[in-house]
Structures are given as C-alpha cells and as structure tokens.
Length: 236
Image (cartoon, rainbow, N blue to C red; front, top):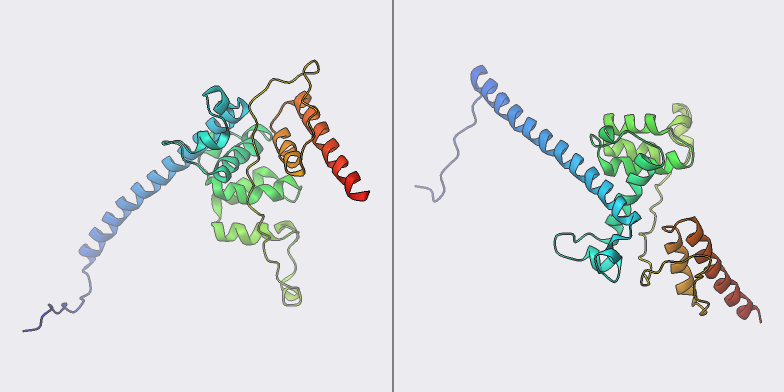
C-alpha cells in the first residue's frame, strides 16, 4: 500500500454539477466585488479627511511636534508618501477640478493617480480620463498614459516598429520636509531673519506650498534670499 493516497482520475462534471459550481463562485465573486467597492469608498473617505486635516495642520492642534510624529502613531501608521499621495489625489480631483465625490468613490484611487499627470499638463481631460479609469485595467492605463504624447496622439500601426519604445519615467519619492513648530505669521509678525542653510531653505520652499497666500509669499521670500546668499558666497 503506498504511503500517500493516489488521487482519483479527474472526471468531467455533469451539467448540474458545473451549474452548481458556477453559481457558488458567482456568489463569492459578488462578495469580492462588494468588498472592493467598500474599500474604494473607504479610501476616498480617508483621503477627504486627510485633506481637511492637512488644511488645518491638525497634528499641531493635537499636540504633535510634526506631521511625521502624528503619522507614526498606532491606528494611523501611514508613511509620509502615502499621506501626501492621498491628499494630493483628493485635492487635484475633488477640490481643484470639482469632480463628483460620489463618482470618485466608485473608482480605484491608485488608477486615478495614474491619469493625473496627463490631466495636469493638458494631454487629457478629467472626465474622459476618469471614464478610462472605470473601464480599463491598470496595465492598460499605464501603457496609455505613460507616453508623453498621450493616447490622443497614437502613432499609426505601420510606424510603430520604427519608433523607439517609451519607458515610463518613475518620479523619485517625495522627501519629507523638516518641520518647524507652528507659528502664526503676518505682515506685523514676519518670519525670523536667521540665515538658513540650503537644506533649510529647500524645506522652507516645500512647506510654503501648504501655507495660505500671505504666509507662502513670506516663506518663499525668506528661502529665496537664503539661496541667493549661498550662491553669492560660492561666486566669491
């Protein structure tokens, strides 16, 4: 007698058995789709809340020294890049371009992120791009939106062999800026004039993107002055 049981030869299913099998798997697939829809809705709701939190610099209000410290706490534990991506995609679609939020919640946020560079530089319109998100696979999206010319300017088939393939350009991950304690600044309370290092000036420019118009001008003025000072020192 063999140590391991020998599998019985496979037999062809009857029509009834196949119908039962297909019905069972169809019900399982329906639950999978429902779970993925709920997941998409949840991630968009999270992106919306993170955007509102970011607008308020909420980590300071809750007593954290930096955004990173708030992100690292149990129950949050998002990386800086994950946080920035969720905030950015929500801002670019729901806030700046006023896309319908209920419609966005039915889409894969990571696929929406794939089309945003083309939308921002004018190669695609957001409604058409979101329709592609809803009807095409992620692989199709990457192939379609990776080309600098976009899908609206595809080459004829007989010219494709003569054209070099275009590899998608991977952007470096966003670096976390050095954060300083929160301070209300105004024309009567300008930023300190302490000289900045080049790294500090770079961080100041990054942080300026998240400030209101007045604070942004003051922060950028300080950073640019520091950079110009360093350039003059190098020229001497």
